Amino acid sequence: MTLEILWFCLLAFFWTSYFVLEGFDFGVGMLLPILGRNERERTTMLEAIGPLWDGNEVWLVIAGGATFAAFPVWYATMFSGFYLVLLAILGLLIVRVLSFEWRGKAESTRWRSLWAWLNTVASFGAPFLWGIALSSLLHGVPIDSDQTFAGDVGDLFSFYSVVSGIAVCLLFALHGAVFLALRTLGELRARATRTASRIAPVAAVVGAGFLVWTLVVASDVNDKDLFPGVVPVAIAAVAAVAAVFLTRAGNEVWAFVATATTIAGAVVTLFVSLYPRVLVSDPNFGNSLTIENASSAHYSLVVMTVVAVVLLPVVLLYEAWTYHVFRARLGGEEAGTPIDLVARKTGA
Image (tube, rainbow, N blue to C red; front, side, top):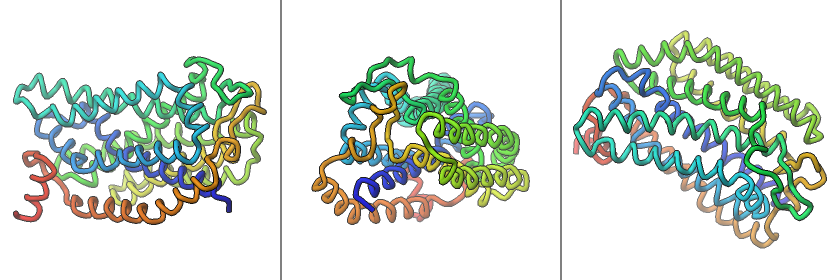
């Protein structure tokens, strides 16, 4: 395995980690006005992801930084062509951060409701645009022979990319509902379970349709065979169907595993469908960016590999410990900062 292939696989892992982990807290944000019947329940929902969401976003920083360092040409072409969409995503992520930090700055019901709704809007908007941006890597955009983007923002919006955005939102909403059923108690937990069971069939159908469509697009515009792309599609489809039955059975742990597997399968399908290209050029297929013509120098990849071998296990251990510490179910007690939550749990 060459270093270019290794870093393409690592990027697939980083993006998969981001969407699986950030997916459930996006989903919780989407469900705030649906499941949160009063201020206490909305507070509990935000408290469920409060200690986790900023750690989940670290994977976005890692994925973006690794893309820049390992495949600078891909990064430059993608960010110049997708600039407005990525800028909109950044703006929505900033709104989410502000909603977490500023919602508790005043006791006014109107103030808290405003930031809850802004969190919901951002939690819908960012995943929808992520689906459009990432699916456009495979669907193809105009690229010149000098590897520069030659289109406009309208080239990112196709029927396929819009369906991709919708599928991402549905899968994240289901992931978030199952996470809340796993992390809460009482009526909020029961409501989350019912909501998950209602979302699951729709998310499974739309998600499976999107994955099959991805195989078709990969064959039409990226000269890919059915294999090996069909493997992650089959795994994701089985997991999506399992999620439907597991949510109805009230098996929250395995339902969460199933929704996480479905999202992971969707991201892996996209990367498998792309390989060995990283950005498909349409209509001039010969101008596509590949892992060879878009990568950094060999020495840079060697240094990055050493750094990844040393630091990646530390990141994984820290992430695992964080989830272990905040594993207890929540029953609607007053929310606080992550420090307050640790103090309650440890009795300090």
